[in-house]
Length: 97
Image 1 (cartoon, one colour):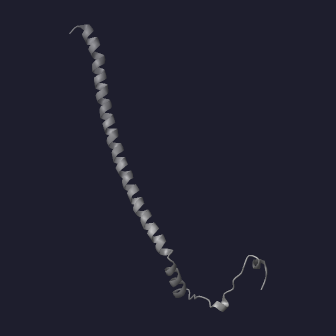
Image 2 (tube, rainbow, N blue to C red):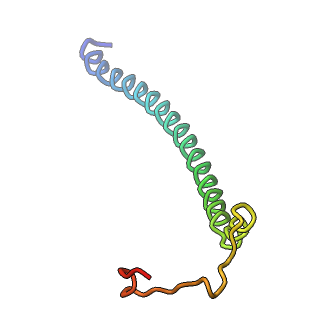
């Protein structure tokens, strides 16, 4: 090969090598990002399961029948008789009985 052919061939060879190295780097980066995405998807799925569990727990704890049962059993509370119930209005709120 002549000197001119080598001078023309060298930039092409360098471009091919640089392109190959860039491809290897980008493939590795792609793999790492895919792994990270899978880990984040797993965390998201766990958070969604936990959120559903917490919503169910909140609904259970806020159940009126449960609250009444705890008030009766644990706190010994009961409904007042109609004679003990006092109904006030906005006008009555500032007055003493």
